[in-house]
Image 1 (cartoon, each protein chain N blue to C red):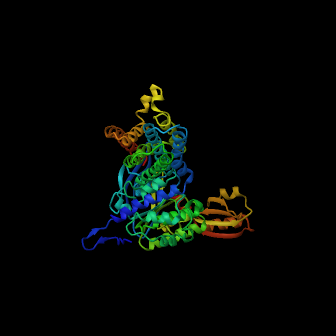
Image 2 (image 1 turned 120 degrees about the vertical axis):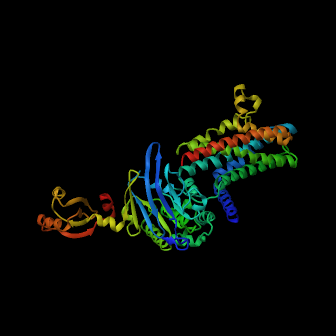
Length: 246
Length: 305
């Protein structure tokens, strides 16, 4: 049991080191949401407003989950599938889910760190100062929020051809950010897009984050359940695709 | 390392299971038969080489041996178990033909990580020394040469103290020194009782290390024999010489099987009748020089198989 635990920890450590040594990915993933938050939610907002500030905090915290999920998992998964490393991982006696779990854990860690930075900006600027329990729930939401984007990235990586994976993983990024109510407020979206937006994990993550800040546990449960189902379904399809490729 | 003594278990009289066994294993890809009913046993302390051109099923066999692919018919057994079982794979080491390692990891980090998958791994230093990469331990994998990366892959393959070593085209991308180190390492593992299944495109590279050769053609095993038996099946010699006789004349000789021009300008003529050919060559060109009569290479023996 200790040996297996060591293998899980080793995988997590290796993945963490890999991304820590890739500043071109980790710095934007960490810094873009707090920077956007600082610019658009703080500097460009005339006066603080408690309710609106919490909404904006939830908004940009949700944004922080997208890139780590899609790229830390999706792109790296696609790349390693393309270059044969994934095959090697399957041939080695890697404990079940150690490899994929480590990738998701690192994505969650990046997302959490980004949200902590974001909350630090809010704290300093005075535009977002949730109570400690609400802040803790928001951090959990950000971590949980990497799951659907991670499995989306994994699914794209399992489908895409060798040279298309990076392009295909990048494709959903703009729609997920802009058209799920994150960068463009939901009420401002055209009706047709609103109908699609409610199905997106970004919309539901935003709903979960807002519900946890309020708190509104019923709403949190429904958004959380949607995210979980989305994750499980896409994860199952991705696993099936991976097995079919063997 | 486990010892499999072969024969029967004296106490119970039961035959022991071979480490790696293909039992009429068949694999199809999109309607094409990649591997057709392969029967093969790899015993401890021996090196079995799968040889054949591209698309003959070598990598498919390797993939099935390490649990990547499932055969449609027949089976593959690792220590009597399905290769997909993690308990079986804890006793094998793998070196794939095409696998880029994470470039941001240092060599010692990669060895430590892979070692953590196994119950009784070598230390990082032991694995590095065995594969000749001690000087690279602190280097990032992305900053070393392709030959050095292959040597790192060898270290990862052996760090778990495997009882079975599966090597898919291990010499590809290696320079001469790297090849020598790899072959030396494999010999050491084999002497310790490890069973080795390997593949190669160029048969000559495995001379001196392969105990048995299994030749695949179109996914089907066409021959399985020892290296010496394979050579003995075809009494072929190579006559190497420098001569002024025209190539067309030499090609038309009944004793000539194959003519190639070597890098030093001499002709290499493969023949089943070396004495007759040498007499004929001298009769055609009394000034013939730099004559050598050599054994056929394994590559040629396989061509004739």
